Image (tube, rainbow, N blue to C red):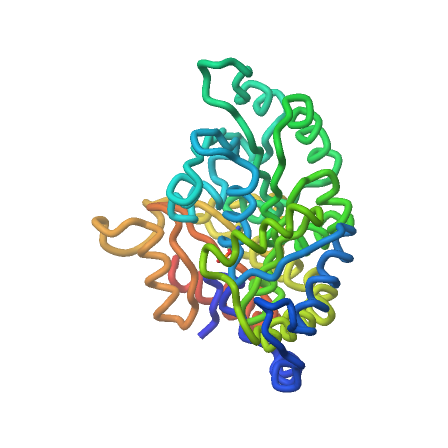
Length: 348
Ligand SMILES: *Cc1c(COP(=O)(O)O)cnc(C)c1O
């Protein structure tokens, strides 16, 4: 199977498995796992921040950040297609009593005037706004990367209103590869940053939450409260260290293959896709339903996804007409060629 559903499907590399088997470990709840400590120091250094915390999932990292930077009954400004709003099971409300203030955009980029308009004035009778959440790359906007110049304009508004800023940088290394800026530059000025080791970086488990020392100490407490205090977890941290060393430098390859896939798909009349909007490893595109063969009572995206599956290609339907494909290290040139041939066959 050619699995384009997500970069989360990547399996740990042989080098990761060797590092995991050889990892020095200790009880990390006691702060005694040397491999976890090394990973946390390495992650903090990569983002040029003082501290980092290893968390089991990106969702937990994001939600710890929300929890620490909101109060119950306060609002969180977020782009309307953002992961923290749409794919984290309402956690900000369920776990922290926070309310999302989703802001729809035309192209995935919040603009400073929109953020300004979404902030409530400070008064005793209005819901307080506490946090701005950003996402880089932006998953549902076809893996859209955001340069640091744009981020800075949003940080300026946030600062002016005393808001905290959290960056959901699940794919910040993809954003770095796409923009040519370092992850540290892309994250500069944000109070907290989460990034995933488990997506295109291919570690089996794990994400990092990065920020100031005091905040990360608090994050350690909240992680334990949520049931995320892990013991001899150096076996996983070891894979994370290999992910940072081996997988970060190769991400541009995934972007090139996503571009090739986009250019090929865009030639098909049933596909509505502008390849210039594919800037990293994610393609989100629309189908023209009348041009997708199959039963009319099945949504076009499902007809297409089902058809591809019979050709050995997996991808995901995002809505009745939207499909997502993601490239990663297990997708080589031959897989891109085969996926394009399958799409042509399904849509013939
Ligand atoms: C995958 C993802 C997350 C959450 O990561 P999990 O480890 O699956 O919980 C958060 N934000 C974005 C943008 C993601 O793509």
